[in-house]
Each structure stands twice: as structure tokens, then as C-alpha cells.
Image (cartoon, rainbow, N blue to C red; front, side, top):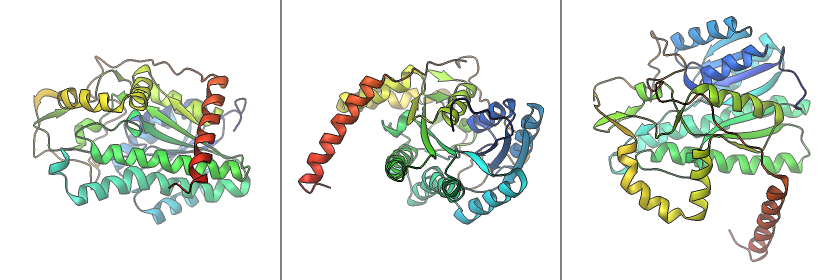
Length: 336
């Protein structure tokens, strides 16, 4: 999808569209005249998102679906194309998480986070590719995180899932280039966002969870996602905090381990005690009767803008050459 191509009348699919970043992204596409398919589990949130898209000038289609079910995702894609036309953009945004030390996690915690946050992306991507590749056009955008590069304490399942998405994208992108496909694949790495997920995420922490500052409004992410769907960049790193986390981990990962061991617990919790009996959305939606919307409770400190610099071609080319030479040397020695 070229920079000049309008989104007017284009069909866009967004998973996790009922709240947070997905909700803000649905509105952003609607304001550009897109037809927006909304995929999520919570019916109240979906209805709210449907109303927001309609009010913003878009044509909505809400479909309750759990992205952990690949057959359900593929069926939803077929319904979307029948109702709205060929899918032009697919945004994989759905996620769940667990705030907990590893020693208190369970195998089922890891399995469920992986099924939604990683495999949900795979399922959505496969559904999109089945339809985009024969037409040789379309854009797939994965909503990532700085945590796709730098794991932090208390979020091991989520960090692992985002790492997996990153590796999956590297493999798929190389295959698309090999096949000379005009389908674009982008990953948008986000900083901390002011979304309702902190009201419903499963947590074993003694105090209420919070995003690690600096915190940004979900509209910041939405604009980066829309831009990625039009321009088709390899990756977009939103905000200086994201770029610092990624660059710092590449340069001095051990320092990051040490720093996070001392600050990571406190930075992810407020002073308020957590209610151990509150509902969470790990296995089922919590927005069945209440629409949580796009924003969380951190609006007073959330930033409405973030820098998203363009990468310098010369720097990217030099890095690509270095990586190619390293891979050639590795594979030449039969490395794994």
C-alpha cells in the first residue's frame, strides 16, 4: 500500500478492537473513511467501538471472536470480506498478560498468554495472507512493544510472547521479500500506554499495576499504526523511551538486568493495594456489560504526542550489510 493511497473505503481489520490501543486505532481509521472490522471478545466493548467508528465516519462491523481460535479468526475474515469487501489492512493488536513473578506463574498462565498474545498474531496473519497473497496487495501491522526486545520483571509471559512475534515477523518478512510479494509487514513497537488493561489484567502483585513511565495516550499508538499501514515500514519505534530501551538492551543488556532488578518492581505498581478478588480478562472478557473505552486511569500524566523519527537510509543500509555478513559467516560454519 503506497503512501499516496487513500484509506477511504478501504477494509481494515483490527483485533483487540474493543478497548485501549485497538479502540483508538479503529477510530483513527474511521476518521479516514475506512470500513473497520472490529474483532474482540467483550460484547459491550465491541458495541461501544462500533458506535465510535460510526460516529467518526467509518463503516463498522463488530464480530465477537477469541483470536486464540484459528478457525474462528479465519471464519471472521470470510465474513468480513463478504460484508465489507477485500481486506486491505489487518492490524494484530489483541493481547492478554499476567503480572506475576515467574516463581508464582502456572503453566496455564503461560499457555493462555502465548495463545492470545503470540499465536493470536499468527492466526490473524495467516488469515490475512490467505486473502492478500493471491491479490498481491495488502498491509499487515503487528502491534508490538519495546518489551519485544527488552524483557522486564513481572511480565515474563507477555515479554516472551512479544519476543516471539518479533522473530515470527523476521522470518515472514524475509519470505515475502523472497517471493517479491507486494504485501507489506510492519511491526509498531510501543511505549507504555494509558489503556484500561490495567483494570482487568490478571495480577498477583500486592499493589495495583501501572505502565512504566513515561506513559502515552492510545491515540499516539493509533496514528503510528495508521501510518505504518500506509507507508509499510519494516518497523516503527514510537517514543524516545522505546528507542532507548531497545538500543540500551542491544548495547548493554547486563546493565539493563541490573537496573530493572532494582527499579522494575516499584515502577510497575502504584501505592494502592490490589484487590485479589477483582475479575480479570485472561480466560474471558470483562467488558461484557461495561464499556471501558480507549483510555485508562492515567490520563493526568499521559502524553498526547511522541516522536516517531524516520530512519536514515545510510544507517539502515550499513546495518543490513553488517547483519548479512554475520549471517553468511554463521551459516557458512553450519551454525544454528
